[in-house]
Image (cartoon, rainbow, N blue to C red):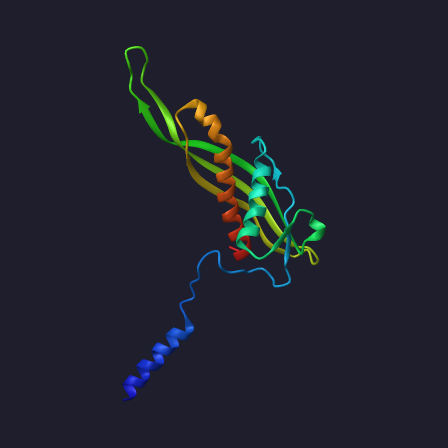
Length: 181
């Protein structure tokens, strides 16, 4: 009888304690006093044209879509201020395809997938106390993007590709800021 009681107590203890794991994107490490987050325009320290506009818009959209925070653009209006700087953007070919030679043209190799790496400096500061809630000067974002081998469609695809990259970046950034890791 005592053996059954011990097993029941152990099972009950394990059930009540839980394992400590949680689903990413579902917790919030920010203080309960923060209800409004100011997201001024992200600074662009690179030569990538208008990347800061896409990243700012995507970050605002992601905060609104995946959190309960209200988002404003002016730092004076927020309980916390998220500031960011794009320090570098690099795209390098990752996968290639070879086009065989014909009688009139030599064989050529073209990139079909690019690896985009972006490095940012991000700081979330509580507006009243100026306490830094989240900071990293090495927020790295890496993702692979397929590209078309047709030059005409490549230029038509560039804006949507940058938008997808900004959305992916914003999802990772908002999760990192709200979960503080």
